[in-house]
Length: 177
Image (cartoon, rainbow, N blue to C red):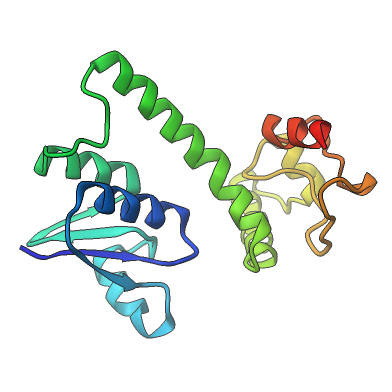
């Protein structure tokens, strides 16, 4: 069987799966699925057009956490998660925390940021049945934080101070600098 990972260099979730495959020592083919010429191929695999997607023979798995769990079940040598149930629960909690906090930071730091901000507003406006602004997204908890979408402020500058609605990691990083 051939394992194929459909991912992207800018996807933290695809990198998480690639690291898991590397730690297990499993050979796999890596396909950059977010390029325009692969769009239809990705749509057939995952109608949501999201990476990562893993194929193992005829089996198709989406969602990075589900893929890692599948890899541990299917290939039990070199486990990715702890053996004890209690430790595994803690590891999965840290995994969810990293998924929720790390990916938005990477998106904010990448060149995709203006696009992500626009898409966030569209999602918020559909969910809230109104047009959301960056300041209202922080107050209503909709997929984002209050930010100026078109402006980059380097860490440590006075304008880089975050509001109380910013994630704790952003506030503590600014305090320590």
